[in-house]
Length: 400
Ligand code: NDP
Ligand code: MG
Image (cartoon, rainbow, N blue to C red; front, side):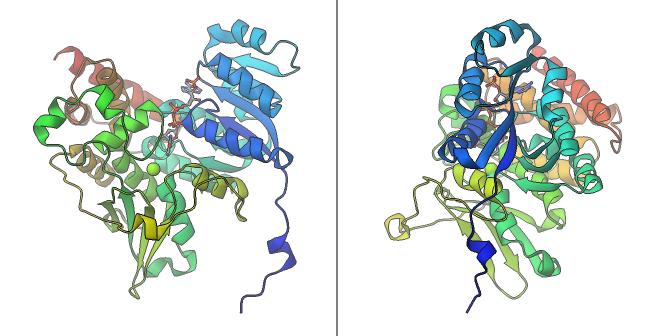
């Protein structure tokens, strides 16, 4: 029988926490768990992009020491919203980096997009552990980011549900016996749509994710399956496997989040209701576990779990991501930058749904012509490629 030590049953330690992207979908779920366990968390800093009202309300609710909005011009609004609270406030890129530099036990990286790269890299320097939702850090700058994690000896905890699943299943001591990692995908709102239906899909239709409630960019990326492509790249950097050991299966119920196949025939799966508070709690309590209000699975009620191979013709974004991973160098950075621009253009109805992967592929082709750098030695190198790819993708969209 397993021996249970005193330590394993004891309570969780108090931690000092910073949340980058505190007002978003992930940030709000982190805050929800913090508010349910106020004795466990001391909030050092909260960072948002432009939502001053929500930032101020959250900072007051959790008693944060420092609140920062990334847009300079919103400094006065934030000061006003926090008046009388005693909470220090800041605005602009430098203030964001200052918030990320405050020594703490854990920083949650939940800013959306490549905008999260600099602050999250900064947080690696001052935070013992970084819980990473911002997959763009690994898509745009995977090697650089992981080099920094290892150089500084930091703990990197995956918050993305599939990677949290794999993290729980991956036996490091038996890494050589891992044959395959399988990431599941819901298939999004267009899982059964024809190419013609996909061509005429509207932002409102694409924003209706069947199982998960998330920010708008990742919701569109889920509809194109670019998100799953990003997650393949993310998994490549997080776990010691080769690119061809990473598979994707469409699993519409979103109950199984990830699987690891071992050479002895065992296929391990992690299951849970599609609620981000489970992988978030796994990060916040690691290496222990904490209680959440997440609905517990009733497998008899669910009755059926189904799996299918993704269709790369209807979802070319997945193919593009796999090709970018194989190509390496700047290709994944270009992939993300072009996708950020294309998704924004789709949401503002400048391009159609199937134009998103087309714009990304055209940008990748153009960037190859100009010979992108093979590897990055600094965040500035990454942001330089990111900026050039954005400009090329904007040009492609304008020329349509
Ligand atoms: P949201 O769009 O809901 O939230 C994004 C957050 O980032 C907001 O707090 C926003 O502030 C902030 N932000 C935006 N731009 C900047 C900036 N320039 N500087 C500082 N802060 C900024 O996104 P999600 O919460 O859905 O996603 C966040 C990250 O987590 C993404 O990388 C996504 O891929 C990843 N992720 C999300 C999942 C989910 O379930 N939502 C699941 C797995 C991963 P403001 O509100 O003021 O605009
Ligand atoms: Mg995910």
